[in-house]
Image 1 (cartoon, rainbow, N blue to C red):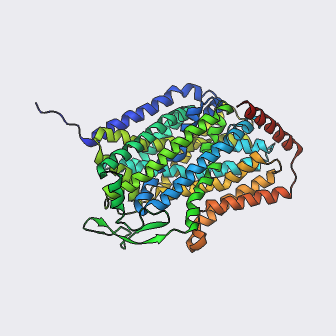
Image 2 (image 1 turned 60 degrees about the vertical axis):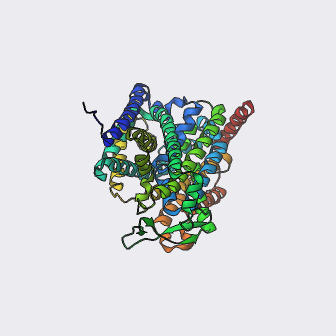
Image 3 (image 1 turned 45 degrees about the horizontal axis):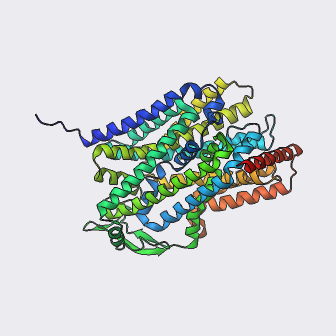
Length: 531
């Protein structure tokens, strides 16, 4: 009797379906508790342990960009840009956990037990009544940038599923968006954090497995280095490879060998642009909210170590998968957008289909772990901060949760519309949202935690200047080239900081705000002495 053979595509589907069923199971398990109150739904009742806090923060932070965007950069232009970006992110991760995590956990509790980032800013500056400009602007900017972030996740899912199953990008992208929406509807913050912990494990496992097998397939590290030397500038820290493109924007190849023009020197301006990614950590809500949710500020030291180790291993593996991909599949991916599929191509060609399906669940894990965070925080900015905080302050919890779900649907719909273009480059979409958050909220977070002289008006000015700088820089000024090619996060961060300082220096700090700041400092000192 002839042995039945399961088709590779079906094996991929089975492996990934099992993974998706596990994720849905976590959401269902936490459904009752998460929906008991808005505090449980948005912050998990501040009950998250250090390991879940660390892993869920990094998983929701990195998204599908880690498994597709970053390897794609390394595959397309070589080591330089990918390395400096990864280095900036690794350093930024550590510093953020070191100087922001504990103070924010303590201050958010002192400031009326704040459960969202806009809540914290508003309570930090003692906004009252219906005139709450910091609450309003922070909620609006969170909504805007998280819609863009959600779109990047849907692009990732669309590329993944269309590559695996040969189906249309748009139908697969929409299917993935609906799955993420359904999951976020069910579980809330606690389910999101627990599943993100699992997904962080899947992500790092997938990266390490693909890297190790890839090195073996290529004949070892020495052979990889020798092969990459044929591509000008590919292994240099201060020069960047430059693919030779035809009029269609595709890389030219000769006898299966990709062609590169003369390598371009990487200026300190470009290195600064890559390193500036680290500044974004001070303002990204999906990480900051995890700092606020940890059950005990004393456990942050453990969480910091776990997060830092995870980030270094994951970023290094992602960069080297891209480099090794150029050795194994030198002319497989001929456009910058297509290069972001190198992780998928590597897994499909080097592994048994069912195992490849499990490994590629890492991309799905990265996407889900980020998208559910983006949707949840974006929805909370509307339901908790705008609806209950400004427009209907006597709204009941059930009304807040109802508006939350309506907002989730709206964010998903707009994100799908943004993600309709199959040629979207994930790296570029993520960089815009990352710059937006870093410039809008990063300086305000730091000033709020470490200065008692910052005023409400200074905070509002800083947010608006930071956000507008990113929009104007990315949409208009970057076209002029030169210094305007600098990552918009850096000028946005600097101008936002200046705006906060200048406006605060010409306005006065309310006595009640100063007293709360002193209370926070005393509590922080007590906790620090006990650790």
